[in-house]
Length: 477
Image (cartoon, rainbow, N blue to C red):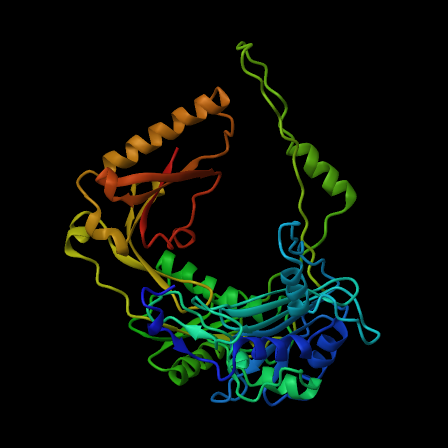
């Protein structure tokens, strides 16, 4: 809530109650939601349906970018998941007045009589970037739960939707709920589908998906941005200045930069004329014999110990298999059919002189999946293959003259923790690398430990580059 509620800004034309009822009554049962989703199909000039979905009637839609023909906004517009179990519903004890309970159920549509033949559980998500509304349906087709933006309080049903411009995390309601032409009695499927198609996702990422691909459009975006982060961490690709990146949505290894979107896309065209990326090989599901062998080989036998006061517990191995929603082969890739992902990158900060004098060599840039948030950290390569990252946000609070001593103390402490926990340090003899993390702690007058992790392989810089407000150090054990 803002310090002064009068500073709130009303962003909806109608009271919240009318806007909410217009949405809920248009989508009041699974059958109504299915008809609205089906009404999106003819709107091919505004939306695109991704075929990479579960083949049970579930659907995924993206909004087309009207300013860039052939390109999509890189954020979901609608996700419709059928046959999903709804979350636990809100319950009320006997102290809650009956009229409040009835009002809640009426608001959620939980007591509406199901209509139509397609009553089954489902989960509908309407999206504009990070602004989202979730509607869950139970097995009878009734609305089970609705969640979404409420806005800064205090607020009532007769108030409009508000935003607080002083809040750094302010998202606001869906633009659909701010329309002046909403009818509290609900809308016909085609009309409400047109309202949804008019929403404009808030994202800087753009997608070009000329043919269906495994993982769908969303996975293509993740591959591309992860590929950029990987290259930024390793130093194999560094954007020379602020501008745009166009990357392939196959594995994210093909990267091109341009000062503008158009220049980056042209540079990617030139890159593809030299060869297209190769799709990853299809994943082969293990046989029962392979699963049994894997489980047997990963079992850790209990160890005998002379300390009778210590009880050793062996946790059996666990195998988790995640199957895709549907089987889909990669299309034949040509320079024209390679999926592309475009996103802007900001200017990298300059490496401070005192960090350069302490052996730090460059600035690592890491983008989050929405490409709207960039993290920067200063990188130093350590003897033996390790590395150190100091986040830009806390760089002024780090004493570089004592940094090595802080790392050494933390690594020794970690080994003592292992002895205390397991009774020996070779519990995992293949774990050759340790990453220790720190955060700025003003109360402690410097850095305080923020945890550690171990593994058989050296951690990659790009996996830890989000440490813009902390310090990470990777060293061989």
